[in-house]
Image (cartoon, rainbow, N blue to C red; front, top):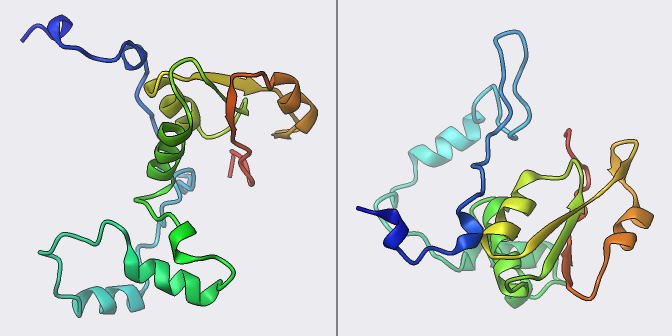
Length: 160
């Protein structure tokens, strides 16, 4: 199949794939929030007693939202968004609030997915310089234009 005949958004054609941090045998990999020790016994026991693996999950995470709302009653369940990790939620935010040519600001060492998703939805990824590996509000505000739609400030920032 000749891919050039497909109607693919030009904004995604030159995006490099995300590459998580590498590890070697002497170092414990912490860059991807992976637990090097595996899950706890409580989790293993819960999974052993769970029998609905064959069912499609609740896409709205209704039960999870209700539990979050119990713990934080100031947040209505309708205002809670759950996703399959931060990547999905970042993508949802950018797709909901930007259009082609809009700008998304993040810091120079911020999470790479901010830029990847911005570019994939046709937005422009703008990087603000950091100070001492931390977000510099003056530098971020200096990047704001009439086209700015989202500003991501990671806290804690990379390296985490």
